[in-house]
Image 1 (cartoon, rainbow, N blue to C red):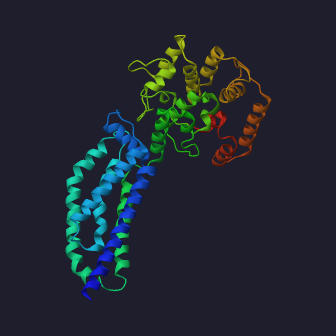
Image 2 (image 1 turned 60 degrees about the vertical axis):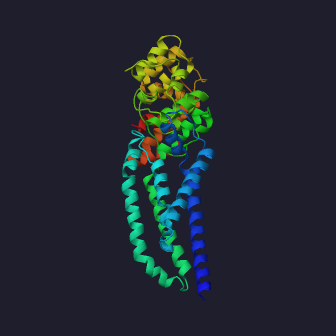
Image 3 (image 1 turned 90 degrees about the vertical axis):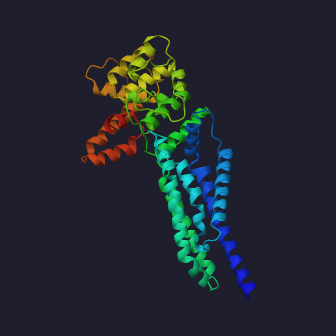
Length: 387
């Protein structure tokens, strides 16, 4: 009978440890390979000073193996504790995982310093909880381990502990959509995959000045800036579209990649407007630099400045990019003495339809929704409804 009970207990322990290990490894693998891949790439970029590039496969495998070894080592230390708290052996591994994926884009290293400072305290608290629960549950678990349903209750308790810790990791790590979009875009841009980068977050309205800057860069590389800029949500001003000169910041991609495309490195303290004007005025401006200045004026809703520059750099006809033609239609309709008159039967009709819809809708909120539904992605909708 003793051997039978002993075998039953060993079998239960094997099942609990195996299930916990499988759940833990699945969580780490999914978290590392899919959810926080880009965050870990930034972590490695910062810690290596940009000297190395994160590999999803190699990095994911190494992190998973190291955390698994730490878990199994911790489990060995806890081998005398009750089986119902076995899942707590995953805590050190999950603590490190949360630390690696928690950062603030303005001060990336700051959260890690706090994690490192709090690590001894967290270890002490964790060991105190393990010891207290071990002493509290030791005899209780011994009394019921031969009862029917012992395995199910023990397994359920461990799964609950694991789930709580995993939820904690998810809440403590960086889960900001915009940050993930930025990191994913920067990694693709670093490999020259501009078209793929433009698909990141395309269906989402969430954006910021830095994400807009990255899209301007990718669109310019693809030759689609004047046709598609306002098909994406735009935030910030023209000052944000060149990195490091205002709100537009890059986390991994070097600003030099933008400067090379535009044709010059900005001087210290130079504003984006003065930087772009100086490049164009030099007579050696690249096509991208001219498009940057024109689109910057559109972002700032400077129609007069846009038309003045457009007349100097482009032929005014139907071959112009879509947003340039939309801006010219708007300029022609809203200036009593326009310097240039641009007509396009289809676009004039569309603009008249938009004005008619605005006149027919009395409620400002309803008007904005209706215009967005029918004219989202046009420069007209941006000009009138985005501040």
